[in-house]
Image (tube, rainbow, N blue to C red; front, side, top):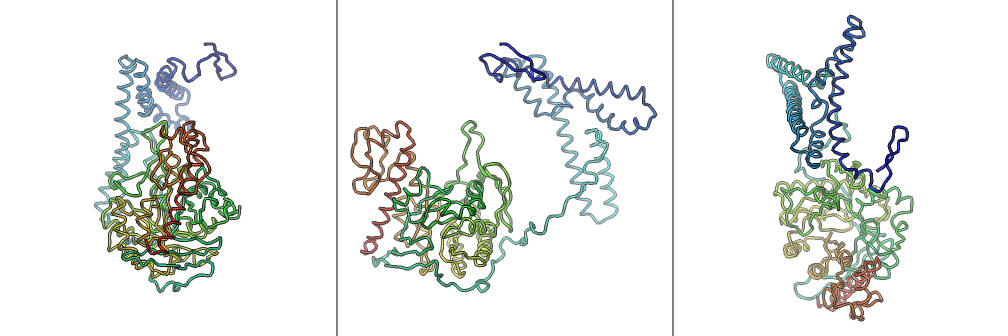
Length: 590
């Protein structure tokens, strides 16, 4: 290895990168630990110089407390000048380099133990000061307050001795009063939402109409064929709604999606808020122009992603149909990637962006304002999404909070409709009484449609059972939507119950993993048997023009085109399946 010096920087030449230099990390660790010793020596010399040449001077009298504190901290050795975290790192590096049994490691261990004890003592002293100050503020007896004052004085003296600071802990520091605009206006978690008479009665709108074309006469079936009229086109129901999370179906462009028959597409407000931002989309002319999609779009409030992408709670989360997923970094399986949920109160939610960590506040009003800027045809009010495994008390409080949030969202929407429709979201988990209460209250408000959200059960069977008694409670003159569930099996199960539209990313997600949905069942296109299969992807369903052998080849070679063709095929299949269902309903067979 050769080294070249240029100014204060050293540049290394040779084959080995700088960060892989042998033993440099261990040498740097020991140098950092000895740095405290040098600081101690310099401090003592400075104090001696001031003592000899400046005794009695005003400058020395002013500097003496700070110098004494600095000297007190330095005389304890390098442990006092290096945090326990840094000492632990240095010790790990020494042990990693095979020097874990040497004298240097023993000295580091002793210093680490001393530093940890000092940090714990300082933290406990600070905590005791805070706790005593809190007791004093709540105490009205003069004698008791005097005793607490004496206790605080002793603790402050101990703090000054430990830290070397000349001032007391938190002296002259005042906590700012919370802003009235951010203070939760309602402390009762079970407070009732506004009454229905506080809103105008429901009436169909000119820009958004729903007509029922046929209701199945098959005994026990509530299936129906309908048509939604929106400013950007019509939607035939029952309808599958693919999810374009970031304003795009993954690996599928807008023109191809239109050719595949996508009548209504779902976009996520949460992700569009994080990037590029609702203002950017608005300046582009709204989502339709931004995406180059001249067809209906539905956006959610962002609440589902806020709660589902937040760090899962191990005490509450368990098996659930709409499972929370914590994305993990490839290089560190121990660290999940998630948007951290900071707070939830009556005002709304505060969370940290999963992209850059910046805090974002989402309130019912700001969620509606964002969806107004996005310009979708159908929008969703802000709601809370508790997990499946919660107590009934917690679930009831969540339902009431969602009702109050949705009432605020509706009021904000009605003040500036902009040719959009708003769906309510019925909550209550699998609790029959809470779901009934939610359906009854939201149906009394002038929402343009009804969505079924929240936790839908631990599996498909529980969801179907819940929808069996919930769907008859929803108003028949308004469309309904099932949020987040639209795999082929679930679609076949919920359409006879009366569900009109349903969204899911499942068909396109499984396509990117090589699973093709066909009328004969799921085809794992990566299997060897399809290497020489030159037939169509599904002979009984319109699809992309390619053979199974060609798509098998693309997946084996990791060609990006494979994801596009597979995703388009599954979209074709889902739309073919829904079209077949509508025809069967018209014939009273479903």
